[in-house]
Image (cartoon, rainbow, N blue to C red; front, top):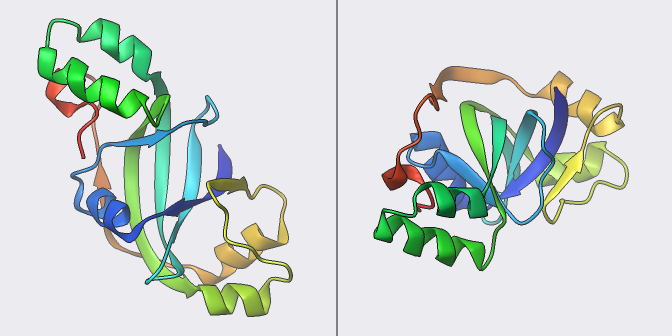
Length: 154
């Protein structure tokens, strides 16, 4: 499974942490399972979680699949203005924090990714894996059945 560093707004991080957000929406994203360290933007400015992303769904496929649910179609069309894909958030794991200051001090040339960066084989991955610790509890989702009221919701 490839590893990456993904940037999130603090409110999105909180929704993922609470389990309310089951899909991560992006305009572009690889079509493979991903383990991502979560960088949370200002005011947090730290890596503080791990998210495991599974199957990638095309929003246009959902529009067809849920065409008989008018409310779902409206939500999907609104999301399609900004995004193309939804990835299943299979699991979330809270971790200790690695601050932006520590990242900049300890990893030469560290820059916060605008969207995401791959970490495989990098000094940054080694640094994160040596520094971060998993905390108790994690959130796991089941996608054996995806209902229309679960798609494209905040």
